[in-house]
Length: 153
Image 1 (tube, one colour):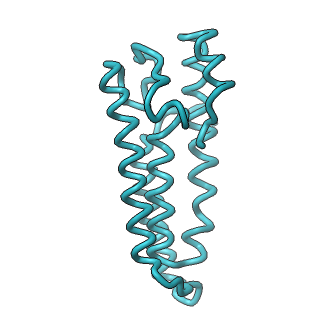
Image 2 (cartoon, rainbow, N blue to C red; image 1 turned 30 degrees about the horizontal axis):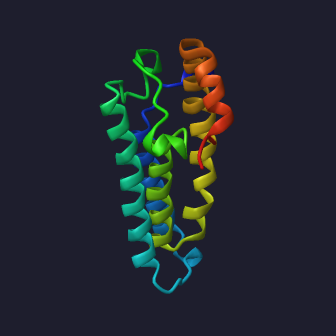
Image 3 (cartoon, rainbow, N blue to C red; image 1 turned 90 degrees about the horizontal axis):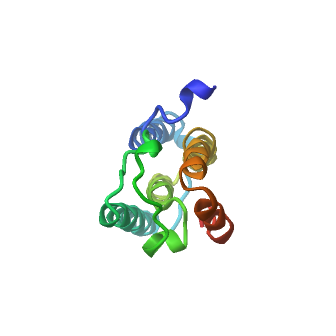
């Protein structure tokens, strides 16, 4: 399973899961449910997700470090300011909010049921390998950061 680590870009994971969520919602329409205001809530979560992810990108750009999640070894600096004071992974958190908004928009049980797969995959194949590299690269500074800021929120 190590061969999957850092291989599938999170944006591609988002796209694939979003398509699968849409597909199951269409194949199994009987599992849809009605939530008053689900369109508005879904769009709001999506916008919030875009803002959170964008804030993460902005902080990386300010620090002049890579935003390529497949190459954490190219990180030039440890970013712990801005949105990174609240989440170690705001870009992934933003993607999760987008998927959560999409699930709400679709108002489908299986769309929601797929969300834990995104979190599990991200934790195992993206975040844990990144954290190993960051610990090796930034040592005690990163170790301290791990104790102060949660992985997601």
